[in-house]
Image (cartoon, rainbow, N blue to C red; front, side, top):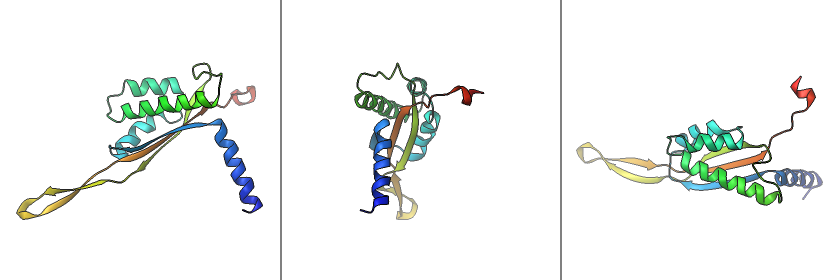
Length: 139
């Protein structure tokens, strides 16, 4: 490995030490519907995001709430002795990627068959501490 690649890899590894993430694989819902819920909590404080997900009527909010709880638990495990309620945690990023779809046949008129794809997705949620606002930023 070249020296530049090694330095870049070390920087990425160091940056990952402060954040905690959780992944949800092969969730059987449409990526578009999951993204609509994920957009609501991106960049929001964790307590507020949990409230948004808990009282949302969207079907995708339940698995996303469980994923956020898992990411918070991962952050607490990484930062021993610190509680998530005491620090100001934010949802740094939520990535929703398409997974494999189940291909099914749907009966159509005149003996034909249409293809139907039951979509699924992968979700990655990253939780980090909020950047501290200094007196310079507030002014």
